[in-house]
Amino acid sequence: MSPATRSEESRQAIIEAALGLCVERGFASTTIEGIAARAGVGKTTIYRWWPSKAAILIEGVENARDAAAGFPDTGDIRADLAAQTSSVMRLFNTEFGEIWRGLIGAAQSDEAAAEGVTRILRVSIDACVERLATARDAGQIRTDLDLEMAVELLYGPIYHTWLLRTRPLPEAYMESVLATLLPALVPAPDPH
Amino acid sequence: MSPATRSEESRQAIIEAALGLCVERGFASTTIEGIAARAGVGKTTIYRWWPSKAAILIEGVENARDAAAGFPDTGDIRADLAAQTSSVMRLFNTEFGEIWRGLIGAAQSDEAAAEGVTRILRVSIDACVERLATARDAGQIRTDLDLEMAVELLYGPIYHTWLLRTRPLPEAYMESVLATLLPALVPAPDPH
Image 1 (cartoon, rainbow over the protein chains, first blue to last red):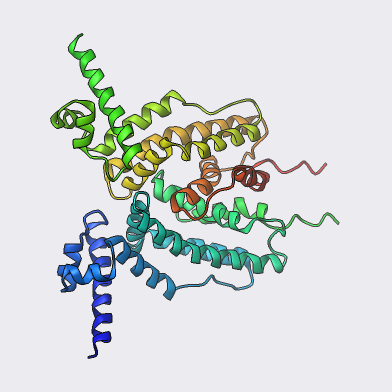
Image 2 (cartoon, helix red, strand yellow; image 1 turned 180 degrees about the horizontal axis):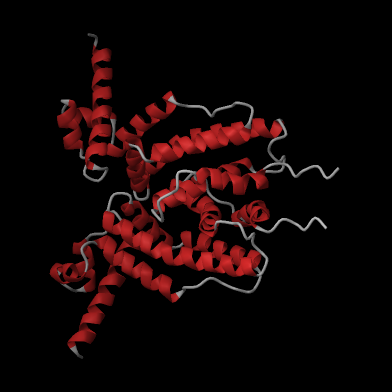
């Protein structure tokens, strides 16, 4: 096994250990010591590659996100938004959601975590803006709509309730949001 | 000075110290030791009243919020929403915003902080729902609208960008949000 291969295996083991511990113990109780012990490496090995536990978790989330990148495009923007926002809501209720929650929490006081969270979201937001632009060109979205703001209108309500823990969301939540919001995003009906 | 008065003065001193330190050093670097030193009390005095620094800050934020409770009601729901959401956005850019950000961050992994954040928001959300209900009765808001969801549509975009730090918001952000969103919340124009 070449040093580069061994190195890559150690990196993966560290990321897996960090994700696993974060799921089991929560973000606050995950430590570099614990990650090192589970991955079978020394702390110095970890610090050679990452400055903090948040940085390791960000790389793990980024890898998972890249594997499932892109926005569905069936040609029907309403169906695609319903499918994509519902899958985000489902994801929030999984172990991944707990890791993501921990990182967003850390991002409120840790500059490196904040940068990582912003970088991860930027790719998702850009994919949604691109899909909305395609829909706009197909006449399904108003031409005068600020697409970045449209993304915030679409995902803001989910993040609002999930991060601020104001209420448990009904399963059909995004259907209600889209039923209310979409009429404001689509072109006005032709009066003729 | 009676023991009750002295006790109340100590409580206020502790809350002031916690808020001050959180503004100066950030939430993560604020400690019970630091709060005790600045307030001139022992750590045991603090722990007699609060289980954590988050609990002290929650009480401070709650007091400030209660002093400025209620939702404006000029009779014009559009103007009132514009005024209230803009003042929330301005608040986010103050020292209070940094304290609130720290508490929401802590709420992602600390059950007591989460409970406090939820309790604080519940009062604000209920005030907004009540204002929307008055507007609905005045014919300014659709009768079939889920008012709790309407609050999430209104405030979700601000919290989305502010907590996820996806972009700096333009000053007129809420004007754009309201211009896009409100047509979906008001009654459909009478076709006759």
